[in-house]
Every structure is written in structure tokens, then in C-alpha cells.
Image 1 (spheres, rainbow, N blue to C red):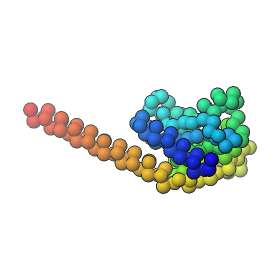
Image 2 (cartoon, rainbow, N blue to C red; image 1 turned 60 degrees about the vertical axis):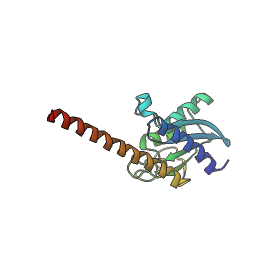
Image 3 (cartoon, rainbow, N blue to C red; image 1 turned 135 degrees about the vertical axis):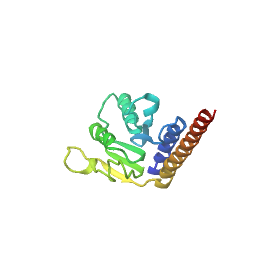
Image 4 (spheres, helix red, strand yellow; image 1 turned 90 degrees about the vertical axis):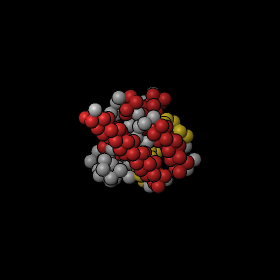
Length: 168
């Protein structure tokens, strides 16, 4: 499979997260050209701030191979990982990461920080970015647009209830 095909699989995971009401980020871990593990954001579902898509996939892959070292694996994720996930990528010794859309507020790979390639740590990870970038970005934009619209509707409902209670 190609990078684009693996990123399509990560997008499937991101849509799964979206359908659960989670921020739509998905990840797949590949070993020897085959998908080893998948993950989608489940922070809200699991009441766990560490339940990012990348962490979920890393946990699953580690259990499958019975080793926390994921040497020779590749991680495909729809959005640039945060610093926490970058740390997990380093500790698990993932060989390569491929991400779709950059994250200009919290990106831990290249946008805000360069945790994986700063040369200070004992492990570096190859990075490829921009794979299916437009699709990955659009999924995020659509999600947050819908969320803002839902919040606006909720605020209007509260205003109406407040008016009725003060008028009555």
C-alpha cells in the first residue's frame, strides 16, 4: 500500500472519532506494509486526556506485538501530533511518522515544536507531512464549524428560556 492508502485508513478512523463526537483524528500503525493497529480520538468517550488517536494506536500495537518498542513501524495520522504524542512516538521508537494536516497551535512535530528531530534525544523519527492534507484539514474544519453552529443554537435556546422566565 502507498502512503496515501494508509492515510485513507487513518481518515476512516478519524471519521469514527467524529461520529462519536470526538475531535476527528485517526491513526494507523503499519509494520512491514501491513496495518498493525488503529486508533481514533476517544478523550471524551474514555474520560481520558491521553486517549489521543496516536496513543490509542500505540497501545494497541504494543499489546499485539507484546513489546512497547515499535521498532520498524510507521505511524500514519491525519493531524500533526501534539507534544505528548510526539513523546510517546519517541519512547515507542517508531521509525517514521506520516501526517496529513499541520496543527499550527499545538503541533509537536514541525509547526510549533520539533520534538522528533531536534537532535537532543537519543531517537529520531523520519517525518513525512502533507499526505492527503486537504482532506484531513477539511474534516477538522467541518467538525469545528458544525460544533460552533451547535453551540450557537444552544446559546439561543438558553436566551429564550431566560427571556420566558423573566417575562413570566
